[in-house]
Amino acid sequence: MEIVRLMNAAFNRGDLDGAFGFYEPTAIWHSRRDEPDTGDYHGLEAIREMARMWQGMFAEFEFELEDYVDAGDLVVTSGWLCGRGRESGAEVRERYAWVVRMRDGKLAEIWEYRDRSDALEAVGLSE
Image (cartoon, rainbow, N blue to C red; front, side, top):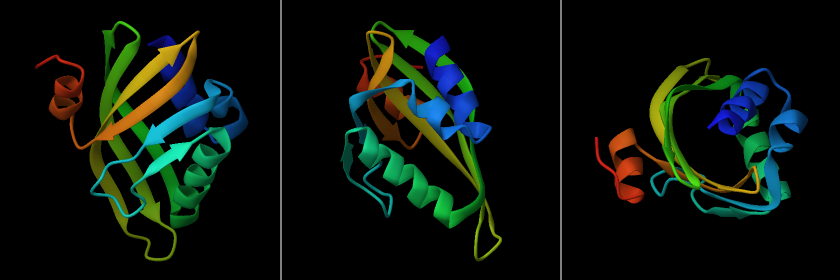
């Protein structure tokens, strides 16, 4: 869980190299199916490109993570995606949850969910 915390802290302070240093080179990111950028991003460079796309859309952008659940080699975390649209200036604050598969101390696979209960259900847990 601490690795996920450290990665998020690096991302939120704009240290993308530091944040992506916590990922395996072959990591996979599965975005939510109800998002405009839906899909699976295979490999660290594809995940970096997804992050650049989000940064291009938002003048300010961060993840406010509220909790962490240790589920063996999986970490479930939930919180908020927060930002301000680059062109519109509109404030965005949307609930998100993630399941992160850890392997050898690195983020290996990430799944996005709409909320904490969906993410917990995905790993066989409940509220």
